[in-house]
Image (tube, rainbow, N blue to C red; front, side, top):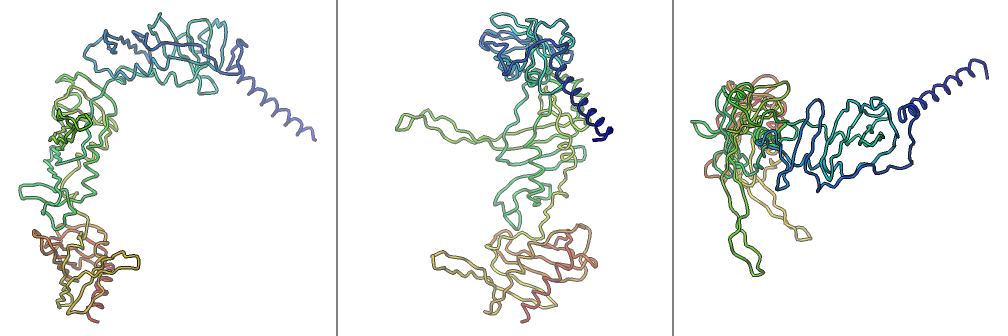
Length: 476
């Protein structure tokens, strides 16, 4: 081995020894203490005996007490909406603390971040206990802990996570109801009011697959199901990020932009519950009946704060921050952007026939249903279209109509050359006929006409392929 390679090996060995020395010094500064092979219990507490709890974290000190009924309270403000699950979790975290290492007879607590502790805890149980959580060790995952016995312990760093809370972190937030059986949603902003209603089997559209409707003075307009439900789910799936005020005054509401909300959302829904009838069944068990109650949920949105937005329940004195994207979606909501993106949406089982206008000719096809039964007895229904008693294999071409995807829209466009027109007859009292027309728009797009209204654009080549297929089938 050359002298240079020997020197390199020696340097690597020296570096490894230096790292090991640093780790050992981190675990036991100045060589103090001994390390056990397994974790040992160094502190126990009976949660049932706890009457008060105080902790200091990031220059905020919070003191809680239990009242005569054993409920947690915040003596500094009796009106504070305390979530008892937080102090309960803290007490449980102190029930038994185990240490991975003990450093005995420590003279200088500042070496471990315990002179000015990251978190100081005072808990009153059978007696008063004082604990201090210090810095994280160099190895990570552990922190130094003092329990006042002159030693320093290495404990799981998660202990600090339980206590790393300020006053507004332990607020009991208002419950957002489960809104599953919706009846309608109204969004009122400075730009106007969007009124949406949910109605099944309403007869308000040519297809009962549409269930959301834009309500205006002129009546009801079907809305795109996916787009509308995405908007509505943003509202019904709301979660509070954090609470910033629990007793907001009129001035406070003004600071958050909630004295004159940027948006007010009203959700109408039906709540279903099981109510006792004061009767019992043959086994002596109580009998319940289903009760449905109409409910209203009101949400107000105020000013933005970074990527969040201030919000509150209608009439509440509690102010929260919510995800700013929720406010974005609500403020941008308008009926025009929610209009259906379907070229056509038919229930083929309701269709009874179709008339096709192509190349100046009209072709009437009648739909029949043929049933076939396989050797296992399973029955399959097949839709068959006939013209003058002759079967026309047009089903695939009609399916391709519903598969067309919009490439854009132009609500002000007028149709130019008519490429093809389909008029579907269906078993629907409100809409016995549905007309679907395709017009030339430009070299790459066709304009879609549905029951006389034009808005969507589709790929021209895809339309012409359908036209060619239909022409070939009808002129055979």
